[in-house]
Amino acid sequence: MGKLVNLVHVTVAHGHLDKIKPAMFENAQSSVKEDKCHQFDVAVSNDDDHKFVFYEVYDDQAALDAHRETDHFKAYWKLVGELGDNIERSSRLYTIEE
Image (tube, rainbow, N blue to C red):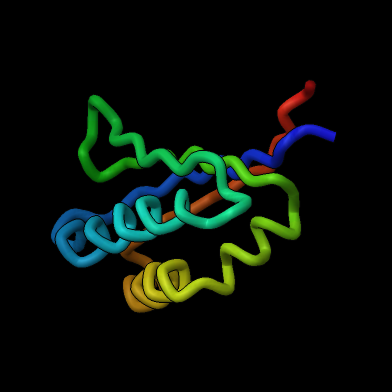
């Protein structure tokens, strides 16, 4: 079975970007140091600097689950919760076929 891709779309309401953006990038930079995380890119929309896509690649579901238990993810997720309706997020899982 191929690696697991978590593709996340994030939209942050105007006036709230400064609160969450540093945590997004800290989460990404720390995640690639995890043993079973191979890639974590944060892409910013060319048309709207409040829209992001996260492209995350893990060995498998267990690696993604382990990622969600890390301090850097929990710090990011706490801020997502605090922003409430000021952040929209959706994610979808994919498998890289080998």
